[in-house]
Length: 358
Image 1: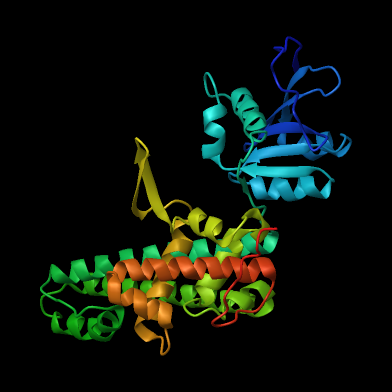
Image 2: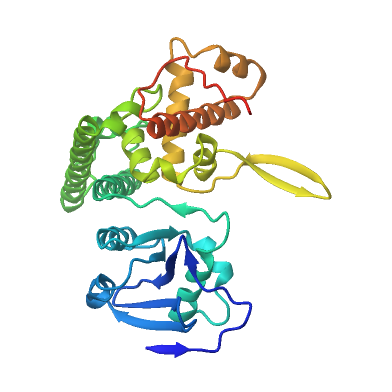
């Protein structure tokens, strides 16, 4: 343990809501803690082994523990909450400006301690085990899609080397592959034909794994009330509903639907100088996966909705197609937050009314 007693007169004693503030830099094996003793003003830097973290905090007075929202942070947040402590997760970009000097575990922990005390700082919602499990299924599905695309593209390229071409789409590839192999029987070595047939089997196995994951996500949707509510929104299907709820964490982490929309990068990017502010394309900040799902859903609404609504029809008449799609995706994101935060079912045509100022 390293204790430094020489605090500057202007340095803040770290307290929030009457609780001592602790900055905790987590890692695989060794954690670094930074705090200031509320009684003496001593700066305390402690290095803790992973196996001793919960043992260290179990007998400590209730405090506010801040961590970066990195790998393993949500697990440790749940464990520390179970001990009665308050926990705040911070995005790494919020912490970075407060890390001074060389980047070490000690400076990282001090940067976290400083960042959490800043006014107006945005916290990351702590995810439940169920939400993390749902996101795990989505990540596995993403990986399988990449593997499938790599395998099918490689198969097309290899067959093209022997003069065989296919129509677009996976269905055409699988329906024509055997006929192409038989047509090349005289020129294609048998060992190559056998290897290509095995590659087709691998692709079909990957697609079967994807379908199994999608069935599990559909089952999760049927058992989760929040997911069922937002699945009623036009353009929101199984993938979007499960991913949005799991990524959001807690709706209370956002003050409004617009803030949630901005967090997903679906609002215009602002640049300004000399008192002039210009709006560009969408900022594309935040989770690109959920943003992509929302845009795909919005595109589906524009193409297939029987009654898209007056707002959407008017927008289509005066704005380009891609702008309309993004606007619809942003509206869907705001609706998702509203339905989740207010715990109400989706109501078509509902109009919110702002309370009048007293």
